[in-house]
Length: 320
Image (cartoon, rainbow, N blue to C red; front, side, top):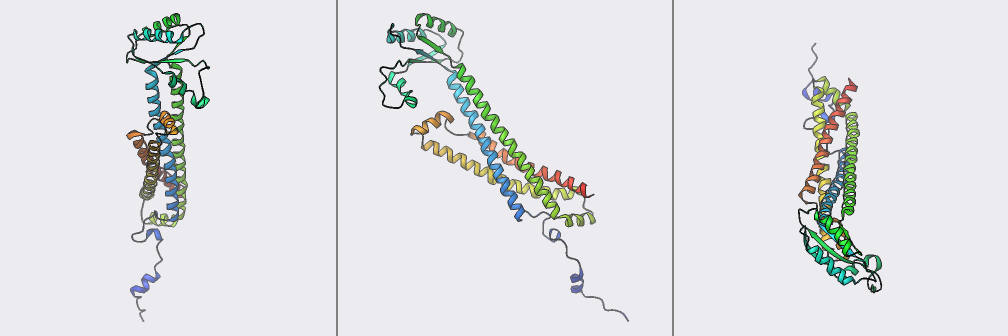
């Protein structure tokens, strides 16, 4: 007596259910899971911090270039008050001597009210500085090719006007260069540390995803899938997470930098705005800065792909 063959519904019901990651139209590594969204948030935050550091380094480099360009093209004559000499006569003598030097393009005497205003940040406004020995200043704008006659001019100035001193700002240029280089190196170091942190976060997330998909990986091995195919699947998913997180973090950094630039332009008329403009220029990072922010976001996505592939390869070798 022959046994009846089971119908199709009973065969489907008796077949073991496939893992969720191997069902039709289901990715091996889900991107929209809770762990995937958490990793994308971490990548976005790290990209935001790295992009801000890169933008700050570019801003410091641009401001330093402006500072050094402005300071290197100028010299200052300072004439100190002397009871035995007429300061106005010394001022006129120094101006006449500077005007005869071929390397000096223009000579400007700083008015006394303007000189007194330079002391307001330290002494306060509204003070009578008549009794104080406030030096008089002469600003010299140099030509592009300054000749060796400036050294001879400094020696002649000290002979004719003993109370005068010539400052070529070389000390300030060195200090500005050192400060700017320190800020730039600090920004680069922060970017590298944040990128390392992003790589570690991706590595731990990849190991967690591999542990959760171990059954699926074993089934793939049984049906003939090699390690390269599995690694590509994980890599593509984590690259997507890196691109999303990098885009969110980089876009947020660009918005913050743009907002700070807009606020600086609105405060330009206030004393605080003048100080910000003197320190950071126009508070604009330019296309170079925005390119650096975009590059950071792309590097984060690349790190996510490379680290995930390397981690998957190591994990699969451990299983083998």
